[in-house]
Image (cartoon, rainbow, N blue to C red):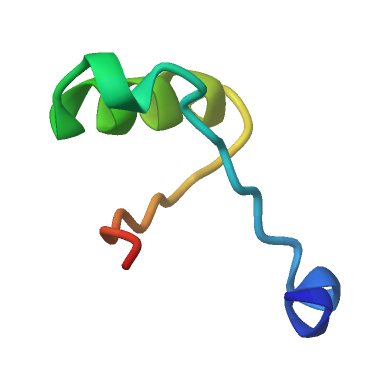
Length: 46
């Protein structure tokens, strides 16, 4: 994913994904990005 580095994209990893719900990961990403971003794109990973 090095090709994404110039695009100023932030990835947030939920280390507790196995014990939670997918929406817990969404909430984690939103909370980390809310103060830094004007726009947020949320997409599930394979």
